[in-house]
Length: 241
Image (cartoon, rainbow, N blue to C red):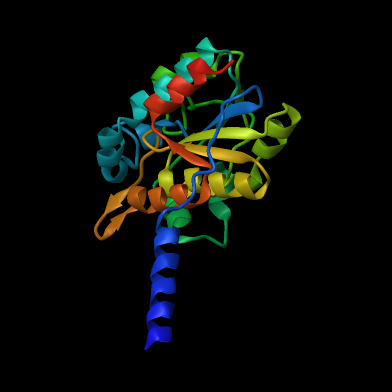
């Protein structure tokens, strides 16, 4: 009985230790950049094709304004921002292998653009930037990468651009929490970057029996070096030398 009691005590102790995950921490320095995924109308505008499922989360988190705060402080501090957008062209609609949400995105013409080398019909479309971000994204401190095609940056040049610009640390925000944002986090961590996530500068779909934002929060806390609120990371950026 004594051995059993000791074993149970060991198990409980182990579970308690796991419940209190360590916080590796994250310091904003000269090797730190901001990465923002999909700051586009189809996610963040009430006129976007996904607003019916993401709007509640976007509104509750104050996501639009929090992303604006990140763009703004980056501009003030001349901090580099990488925007990783999501675009689909005509040839992307011919895919033969698709997951559930890929099929849905193509069905509702999410992030559609008319041509790879032309911008006909792009302005104010679902694929375009939210209007209030345009003044930031057009500035010299912002790099717009090639579009990612599913969720993660494996299919675009984000990691290459970060490395070529000399960045090792990433502050990650944008849409949507459990899809592109989480997939970017996972790939960047696997590629050797230190990643912090801004928890209220993202949001996710709310569906019957599915809260995508809450699902993402669990993985942010388990995988990222640190999880900040927007107010917290803005203070860190302003204080950085």
